[in-house]
Every structure is written in structure tokens, then in C-alpha cells.
Length: 101
Image (cartoon, rainbow, N blue to C red):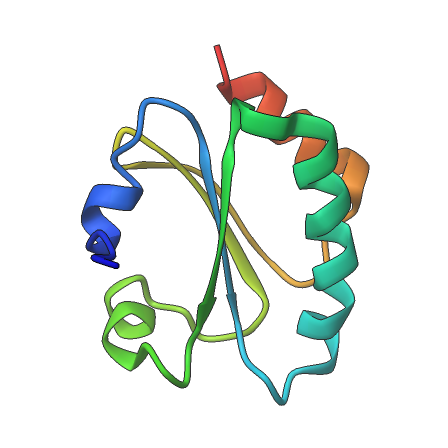
């Protein structure tokens, strides 16, 4: 299966939420069920990607990821929102809904 380059994935016309995380990161593990709930509630209105910063060092450097988890919401290649740390389901849902029209 051919995977699209990151630049193509974030260039979608619908919001793309990217979770920059790491295996060893406790707060990152806390985000997994949050992102699952967000995906269930927003469905196809947004794409959610998880990027392991240790396996994707160039990508992490390119987006200046200094702490994990860092969440970035993209649409048409532009950063619409960015925050580090654990974020609630409600907050993420609201942010995605604001940008999905």
C-alpha cells in the first residue's frame, strides 16, 4: 500500500488533526482514548493522524515539536490550531467543528 507524503495528507479540504507523540510519553498514552472518542463523534468530518516523533524525527523537526503530545489541526496545508499537552474531547471536538465548514 502506497502511503501519501505528510504534505499531501495535511493538504486536505477537511480538517486533519495530527497527534505528535512518543511511545515513552505518559500523557501521550492518555490522549489515545480521547482521540478515539473525538473520531467517533466527528466521523468523516476530520482525519486524525498519529505521528511518532522518534520514528519521524525529520517531521518533528520540521514542525518544531519540542514537547509531546503536541496536537496540530491542519486544513489545506495551513495550521489552524496548535497546542501541547493533554486536550479534552470537548475542546478538540469544538475546534474541529469550528474549522470543518
